[in-house]
Image (cartoon, rainbow, N blue to C red; front, top):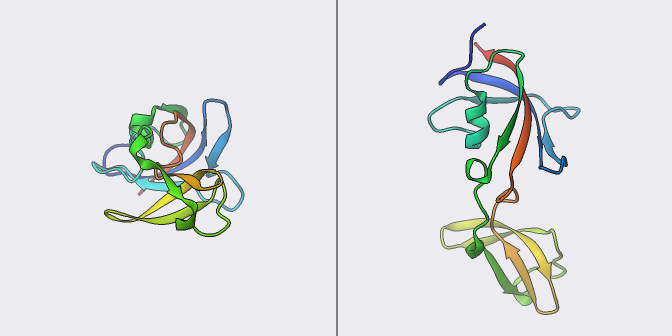
Length: 143
């Protein structure tokens, strides 16, 4: 049976979870198709996920444990800042996702904390700093 290699387009079912077992994403929920991606020098996927797809055969299943540096990176403290509430939309609350203007254009931020006068916003990826575990199954190599 042929193993995946650079240049192959693959279809994969996956379930992503945190170390505590909490699921954060899955292709196996109703209405979703398997993930389709091409294995390339410039991966379309996070590095650890893409690397885990090499040398797999159709139907093979495995679990990938991906450290932050091979996923969404570590939390960068400089991307967390305090913003006066008057500079944010009225009624902003913890968990809200906003678009802000950064030095290089629009950036998505999450509201982590709100008090009487300021909010703490975070421009890190929501999965930054986390070890990710993916149960994957290679459905097929697309010909």
